[in-house]
Length: 251
Ligand SMILES: C[S@@+](CC[C@H](N)C(=O)[O-])C[C@H]1O[C@@H](n2cnc3c(N)ncnc32)[C@H](O)[C@@H]1O
Image 1 (tube, rainbow, N blue to C red):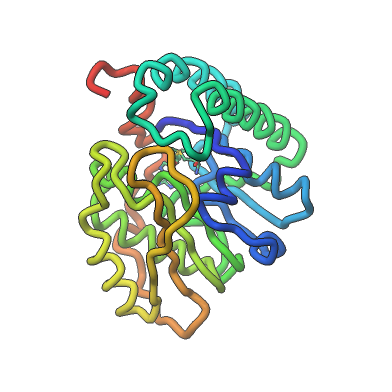
Image 2 (image 1 turned 120 degrees about the horizontal axis):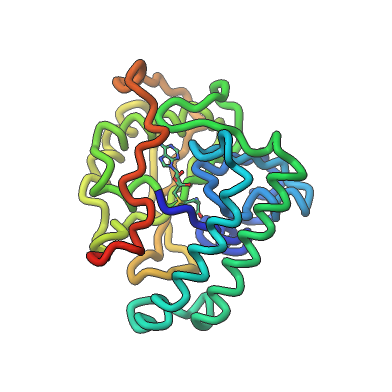
């Protein structure tokens, strides 16, 4: 899958993170080559990232994200009218911030390897309610054409399992069509049935048109979560339907 390097500041905006939020124990799932954990650590926040790509060869992720970002610059410049620039200002700042982020990630994963945990939805290697706040960007919903509803259901329940406060997810749109993930309401009803209320909140961040909302799941109350129907199936590590998608002519 495409390895991206969103910045700590983007995470703050995507998830409307307050100073209080940043005093909590936070999980970033999936972390990719984002520098959220690096930026959080620099300000004393207790944050951990998990991703299937944090196994052997993880030291190559940051340099790979840097190269992909540099490659993407020409595409972003060429299609500038397809993106929203209110947050970034323009393509040059976009590429500069993302490149800095890939470098910050590279330095942090080398300096604090324990903060980057190998793991994969829908089976995370963490105890129930291990985190106060779980953040999940650019996997669920956005890759809804590549990952089916069973995966979304089990992944959402797993994110809820490891949170004792909230799960926040962004964006709610498919990255392929810029339409809302079609099964979003079904997923919210399913979660409500297990005692997990949710709400959609507007945020002051967008890069793709329409991506101005996050989903907030309230996990603090009593809940009775089912077992995962995917448990025992082969892990999705190595399943990379969209890696290098920007190099394919149809994207
Ligand atoms: C587009 S990146 C987003 C990374 C980061 N959240 C960001 O916004 O920059 C998608 C990430 O999802 C990870 N991924 C793919 N399948 C996964 C799974 N089953 N469980 C957890 N992460 C997965 C990929 O390895 C990749 O790093």
